[in-house]
Image 1 (tube, rainbow, N blue to C red):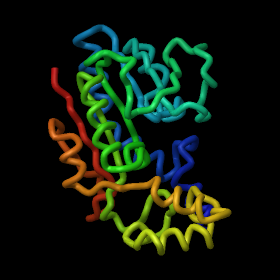
Image 2 (tube, rainbow, N blue to C red):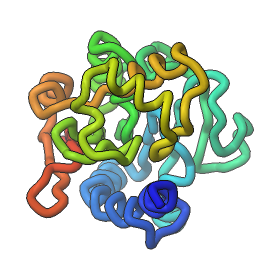
Image 3 (cartoon, rainbow, N blue to C red):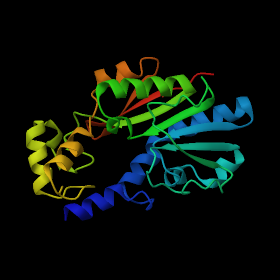
Image 4 (cartoon, helix red, strand yellow):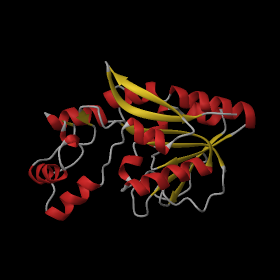
Length: 234
């Protein structure tokens, strides 16, 4: 049952899934950012740090073509993603790089930097700061989303309150159970690495990371589900 629930929420290939509907609503400001960049430049360059081509189905090929949008998708070396590194799509280019080191790109070289549910996976606080600094450096504007620490359901494991438990308890749980996106880990090392791989920010942390942005809150009923940092200035 939990597996089916996770699939219903995280199946972004299905536009009617819960996750797809949340994302479609969430990206309304991103659509406006694309429109403004096109009006100003006659084209739109986007770097999507840690993204996929599938995500951009929410915008649609028609809009990408009409607005002359090109998207550079960045993922870690060895990470599987659409395109397989073959630049056979005029709208998309795929590059293997660490989002904490985008030194191959010059300052403000993209109209928009986009990153969705990635910063919580980059590692330590120091790496999160570096990741945010690189986003702010290479982009004239940016749209960055992250799940919120104080939302009661952890979005990766799809279990209430697990992210509020101690690291030791979380390690024990992921060794015993398959949860959400993750199968039961096979050993202690794998469990510790998984737990340490996810750091959900709170509002204070997110505001520190993106101090020059407007921080929006994505709500579910009265609860903040995720945080979105938007810098959108001509």
